[in-house]
Amino acid sequence: MQTQGQLDGWAGGVVMDGGDILGTNRDCYYTNCTNLKKDEIYIGAGLHCNHVKKARYISNCWFEKCSSGGEGGGLALQNDKNTTVVSCRFTKNKAKYRAASIMLMEQAPDT
Image (cartoon, rainbow, N blue to C red; front, side, top):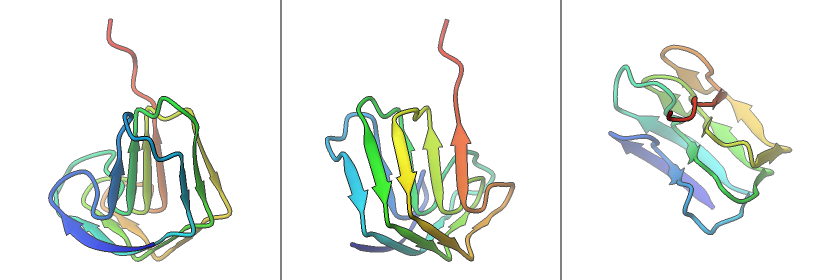
């Protein structure tokens, strides 16, 4: 799968939210994915995974020239303890604040 895109939301490529059934993201090429939303954090321009409840694998994917208006230029994993990233390439990704390639963020539980 090849993904290119621009989006004024969480990801320029793909958003995989907790309810998704897709368990494996394999052999994908995310290129020139851009998040246009400025000054947002924890975005992930290529791929954004959020609140994964079941095991998920990101394997043999290439994140190239993805750009985030906040953090996580290539990949953002938010509240995502069950995702394994294996044999992926990250080249020439950008983020306005930090984590040009991968952003990992764990949110405190609501009390």
